[in-house]
Image (cartoon, rainbow, N blue to C red):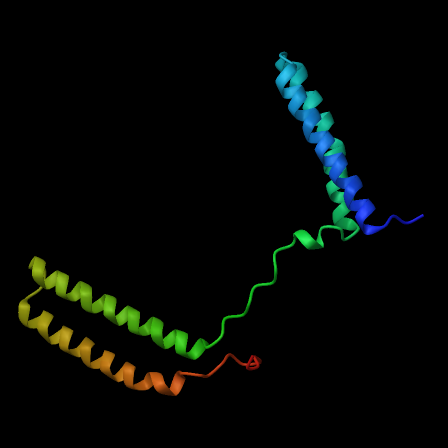
Length: 139
């Protein structure tokens, strides 16, 4: 006779809770370490059996995390990441100049080049906006 899903879930929950309570009682009341470990392991057997049985029967589906949503707008995301990388590069170039690690003329020249690339990237953002990942549909 097959059990209903709710009855099977109830049985599994009771076995797990009783097993955990038994393990807790063993750990709390048994003072002899040589006896505490084997008894706790024995109390774990029904808990493990119930969890394996439930997963084989497909009873754990409601405990599964929802599937990850695919990232959309991959083209735009990659361009924004490139912009962030350029901004970081600009920041550290200026920091190196202020610390005296690089000559001021080199810092100024590189900062101007980075700023030029950033302006070009901003101009290119519009072509990437709204493009969704391949295989995705509009919601």
